[in-house]
Amino acid sequence: PEAPGLPGEPATTVQVKLNDGTRLRLRVPAGSTVGQLADLVARATPGTRGRQRLLAGFPPRELSDMDATLEAAGLAGAVITQRLI
Image 1 (cartoon, rainbow, N blue to C red):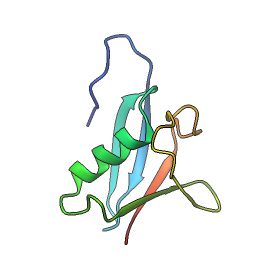
Image 2: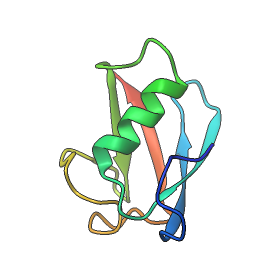
Image 3: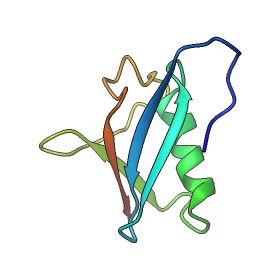
């Protein structure tokens, strides 16, 4: 799936490992925020809004700055893991 963006805006693909073990590839504008990505993941997995945490990197760290852009957070092309609480 693709997130809406402006035509010609640079985009990046992120892969999300969902809590149920499936993988979701999202193509999003590079200027998207972590919060927008979290919203896309929550919409793709009904019933998880408010119960999910997104983790990235090694060792995995929780993505807590929802206002950071994917580029600024170093998440362009990253693998992100969804965990439910």
